[in-house]
Image (cartoon, rainbow, N blue to C red; front, top):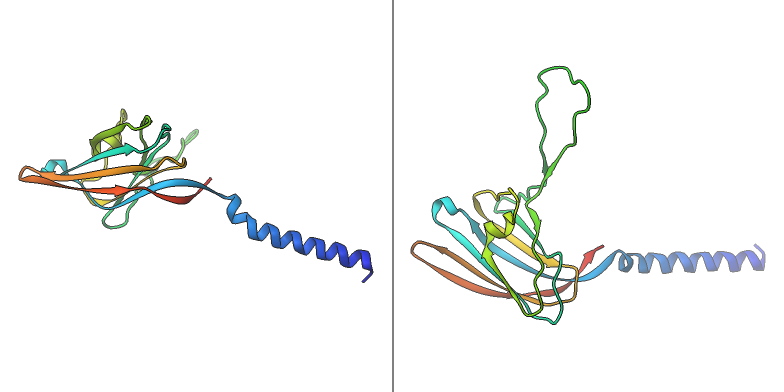
Length: 172
């Protein structure tokens, strides 16, 4: 191998190492997240979860996501299909994924967004959570820290707990 070939080979190998080392960093961005291990969405049984999200920064929090997972691990990422009872004529239409994830309204600097879990999830749409216990993750891709006060109650009373967001790496 000539001197020029060796240099080209070493340069190529260095670039491969640099790309392999930096590629995970390029695919992630910073964000803030709170994981709440227990919530209940059973309004018909008298149980409810209230959530107060407090923006603890001087910036607006946009695109905050609320993701619900049932106690059995179902995050709602299933596909709705329909039975075919006759020959298909024309386009079938899209297969629509159902997800227990929603984007919340913007939260102004030092403001509080308060509602029940079911109302936050539904927003102005027609989505509904399954009537059961589960867990939630609240996250956004910005750097603004936030607190979540969780209220769980029934006709007998309620209790609450406060969670502080943590800085996390999130996929772009």
